Image (cartoon, rainbow, N blue to C red):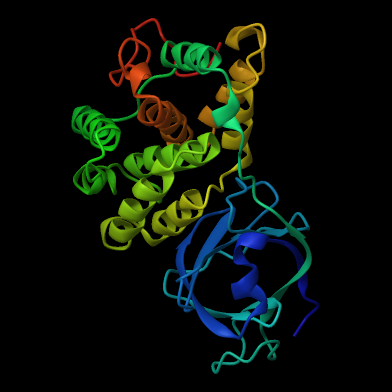
Length: 303
């Protein structure tokens, strides 16, 4: 075994990382990130990521400029005892000869936005109005109908499960667009302090394992806990800090940074912010929040 690679590990995966040694199966791999599903009771998702990757809440980040190994789906690694070990001994003994080992040298805590519920309704309304006029809705017609039904169900105290099921898995990629909208809504509801966070979270987590990708299901679990990528946390901070008005504050910059995440993941997360505000403040759903795309003059990036 060579010298272990140093990583900064998220507190969201601490129990899996330092607990008993268990197998971890590769469920997806890209140039900058390899996703593992741990064989623990929670089916913990762990992302071994380069320093340049989007910092998802379950990331274990390489401290060097090295890239994580691109491994085929189904590759078995082990995690536990403070290390992630890939290859080497077929029995999975940690630190075995020939293994590539990643050891945590420090820990980081994923953002968990709070305090949005204390923001004046007029300020929230202004931020929502500004965003809906400039950011295109990434969903198709059926997805927009599902979102409208989700807002109506939660506002009326009805079960959100049917609408959630129509959104989960909608769209291509590791995190389909419908999932991104739900993730953004969960984090924002949590930031608003809404009791509907638990209602929506329960419906999403109950259906996600059988309805979407393993990567997206794992990230939705983190979203249900209120955790998110830094770019979404920055948008929520800017929404609550409107000051002299959205255009004069940090909202254009933070919205643009979020929209740049992934092919359309950032757009889905940002739309989820708008959906959550409509859910928690049903009065904003009329005239302030539009669930259809903005006018043709609207751009897909904040200006």
